[in-house]
Amino acid sequence: MSHGVMEPVKNYGVVAEFETSDALIAAAKKAKEAGYARLDAYTPFPIHGLSDIIEFRDYRVRWAMFFGGVIGAMTGITLEVYTGGFDYPINAGGKPFLSWPAFLPVMYECTILFSALTGLLAMITMNGLPMPYHPVFNVPNFERASQDRFFLAVESHDPNYDEEKVIEFFKKLKATSVSVAWEDQ
Image (tube, rainbow, N blue to C red):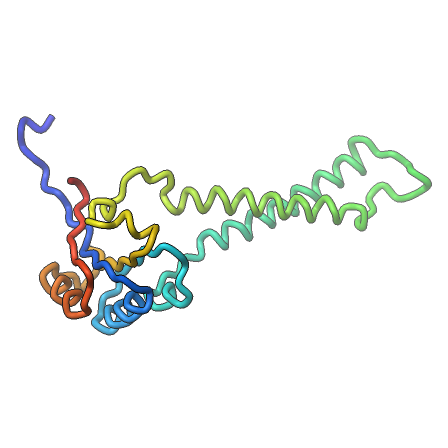
């Protein structure tokens, strides 16, 4: 119990609003040149090259899908070998019990199934979904990020973060609006 003492709210970062995707790309390039490393962008549609500019590279979902596919292939081949060769072998026309060409379709389908399901689960968990609240939701006009506006955020845990300097930096870039996003409001 807090007994009336308010916990301090945490600063998530500074968020700038831009009217066009070109302005957002130019701002992201200038932010990188200025030394900001922890950037995030919010756009109504994918912008080619933006993830390279802000250096968003996260390969965890790819690796999870790869290993899910490997496990799926091994599960498919194990299932076929066990059922066709040991549990219930049926001699159909003198064909061998363990015939690898017959195993390929099941192994292929298990690979695809396991990889897809692993990718879905990895994407949901690694993106932190469901996320009913995020600090940028409090930024004025942020609901337009899914319609016609473009937002660039410099996060507060960036090594070069200084709130006043970031605000001035975004104002020099002719941002439509510049706001500070707080963890709790």
